[in-house]
Length: 125
Image (cartoon, rainbow, N blue to C red; front, side, top):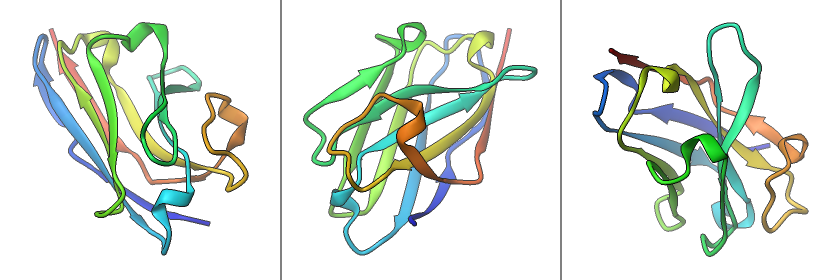
């Protein structure tokens, strides 16, 4: 499995921006498709965005298309999520995840099997 550590969460006002980072402890980060999930209060954890092994293919949930951008730097073993135009509906714990090694790219939540501890994002109105 991949060890993942998220950072960059915090409190921001509506309309603000945050950039989440996820540091991966693995020899070959480029061998893993990656994703960002979030769990809002009282809701299930949902896939927000995913990216292929070398970053050419991406997926976004309809709720975040436009304001959110997923990217990765394989040389630094780091995954990013740039979040712009944040609203209170984006308040959640955000998790970084790695897909099972068989997948070059995936937007299926069930194919992810390594998780970080999560980072809290709170958007005030």
